[in-house]
Length: 116
Image (cartoon, rainbow, N blue to C red):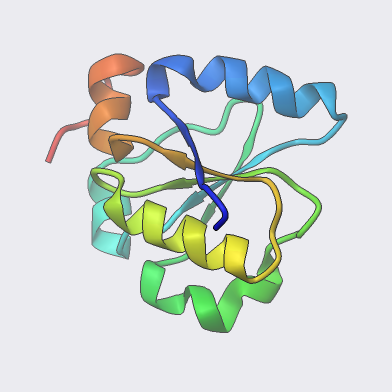
């Protein structure tokens, strides 16, 4: 069984550096609903940010590049974990879940991101 990698927001810079060492710009896939993204969002810095709500992932997965590292983000980390496992099962090889989601991102990394 394939295991989904996990990264805490506090260790996200280390994940970014590992990705950059491969010579690629990583992708953060925000799988929250549009209203959630409007309420609180992260600012891309050294990565690309793509927003696709969880329910739309199966129909839109072709928008994602199999070759790029992907870190999945949601509110607390459960939806992103499910999406990450789905992507691994679809043949994506470099998938990571941002443990604790945007809630942990605000608490550990960027207090300017609103809690909700």
